[in-house]
Amino acid sequence: MSEKLAPPRTVGVLGLSLFQINGMIGSGIFALPAVLVAAVGSFAPMMMVFGFALILPLGFVFAWLATRFDSSGGPVLYGKTAFGSFAGFQAGWGRYASGLVALAANTHVMVSYFGALFPVLEDGMIGAATVFVTIVVLTIINTLGMRKSVNALGLLTVLKLAPLGVLVFAAIFGSFSAPAIVLPQFSETETVILLMFYAFIGFEGVTVPAGEMKDPKRDLPRVLIATLAGVTLIYVAVIWAYMTIATEPTENTNALAGAAEIALGQFGAVMIVLAAGFSIMANNFASVIIVPRMAFGMAEQQMLPDWFARIHPRFLTPANSILFYGLFAALLSLTGGFAALAAASTLTRLLTYVISAAALPMIEHREGRIKPLHLVMALLAFASSVWIGTHADSEAWTTFAGLLFVGTALYFIARRSIELKPETP
Image 1 (tube, rainbow, N blue to C red):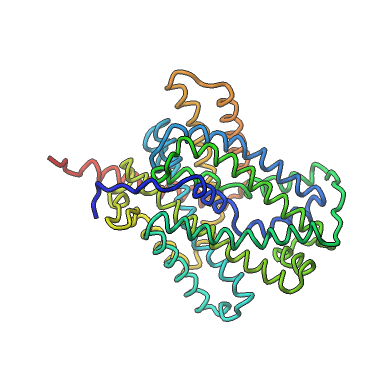
Image 2 (cartoon, helix red, strand yellow; image 1 turned 30 degrees about the vertical axis):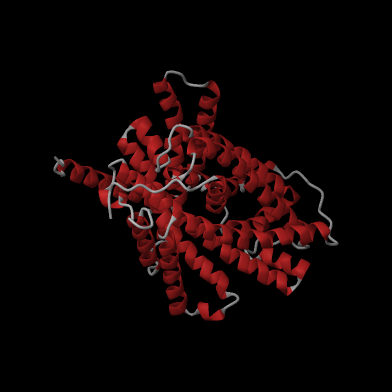
């Protein structure tokens, strides 16, 4: 392997859209409709529009930051440019740590969905082995080239979105009537605000592999905002279809499959269960594409050892970073100790958001002029991220503090090893 190699710029607008869609849509879209309708009734689709309004300032912040960088790293580069290497590392580390845990945990959820159709997967040993092998296979595919990864992700995206489209069409053309929209009490709406925010997090991951995009400064800003709007429409359509078909809304996480069974029979229920499994698989696959590129970007910025920045001479992928991420997550999946870490995953993501929101006006200040609209959006993004963080429980904050401590220790160890490294003549 040669350290002088660089990944080719092969990713265009379609690939970027796939990254963002699958970073945002995982298992949640199959549980969210029932939870929202149970909480706010027929106003549920409009709650997703409010969620879009809540996340939009962050979307604009990342879009404007993306116009300034064409290397991999995303928030790592934003934080470093504005506040130095330590802030850049923390912006990347939190996302990296939560990604590892989420990959392990979500694969267990995926296997449990498929287990409803294939009971052999409900056996403890077989289920655990399937989780391990699935992560390993996703990892190997990702080392074989970005183009192959994008193609595989495209197929998984079709497998997860097509059944949802069928359900929406069944609601439109079936003998169902949509209920009239009724405004909920504000106290009821407050209870689902956090859920709205959680439905959209993950959109920022598309900025990480910028170094492998054809024209990131042009394409990323367009894709970021357009895909946020597109995902909002998908959520609105699915929630509308659910509340149109389901006669007795319930908070059961399998309720969407129940609605599909009402509209399409047993075939519909099986279709949605399979779609849920493939949706989580696609979300995980996108994670294996994106998050290792964050470690690659940190290594390029001398925040991690050079080993993470090495490129495979044949496939031209950051193979070391990908293999480390995938194999570590596969091993983590064999333990039962990641539940507490998963509880803090949102907080670690919020750290990335807070640093990025603060970075935009700081970078513009150094450039000589802070644009008023950019400042307003950055302040709104910063405030919304902090506000969301105040709703976390003590366990999440304790775990978050532990992750922050580990990340800080790793940063100083890496920096020390780099300082002690002899210079090449």
